[in-house]
Length: 168
Image (cartoon, rainbow, N blue to C red):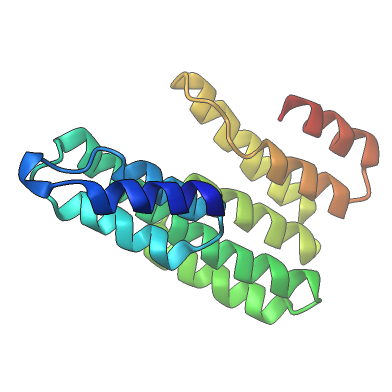
């Protein structure tokens, strides 16, 4: 990603804004995500989001990516804490996620993993399966198959975990 970022930055510096917005700006944001430079990615997506020269679709995409980065970073913090046995921090992250992002699909997955870690794995599976049913009813892809596999791992149901990963 570093090479792609360097190339894109060079291209951007040669672009004359008088000719319209630099069309590769969202691509640069995605490269920053790939390079795990989330602050820079957010800054780029904010540029896209607030630049009136970009169309509405680009604005919506930028807003969505900012949300995904924010949710993802908090989940990484919570998962790291729980993997170290720090369930209290995991719970605090869950509360913050639920307050700020409600029923975001990744929050649903994180909640299920948290429940499994505190001994409520059956409830975690119930919630994930309920979410799957809702999404399939709306013909939306179920994106929390990896969380389902993690819950099965926590429950030491290895065959079900393995089967869940094949669906991912």
